[in-house]
Length: 263
Image 1 (cartoon, helix red, strand yellow):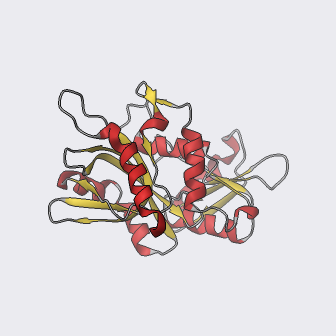
Image 2 (cartoon, one colour):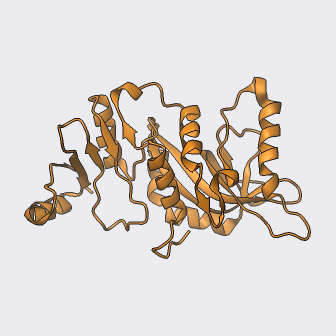
Image 3 (cartoon, one colour):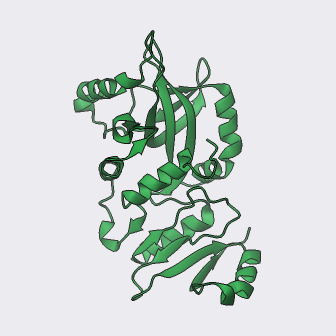
């Protein structure tokens, strides 16, 4: 989804909700307690009283409940009831819903392609070939990271409609890689930094880009256990690290630490 600079893109909306839900914050006491159920609860709370395109965001937002075999029928019934807003019907405009979920796989189907979302085992989401091809080009870095390490989860935010046969079809989507603690990362170097901070039992807030271009320098994380002022951490290539060193005196806030990765 393309942003015009004044509106949030799908990815920026996901970043906003992640921030509002407190999911960018990490403290040692969170270890072992941040499950999908916890993530879902905080995202739904963050969406309360938010308006998107003149309507309640919460009413259009679908975040899968934690799946259990014992509650399969009840979960499917609640899901279909929630999706009724997006079912195509004669004489009324097609309504879109917003999905946030963890991707299990995005693969070719018998016809077109399908996205399988964790905790929704009984219903895949359809997408056409053009969207599938754009996905590989636009999110090559995220998909490569996801495929290369077991320590990464893949989140999606997508708009979707439900056709006359009941099949949910994705119109637009964006992806966000996160660590096993659900902390967003853009690349392997950020993941290494975040994993180290978690292992060393540091308290920090993970920085997000929203609509900011990849060429703009933003803090990867802010340590909040270093006294009165947060300590900003940056991930950079060696070339960027050298440039930051020469620019440091001109910054309003001093660069406290730099995590360098060779690219």
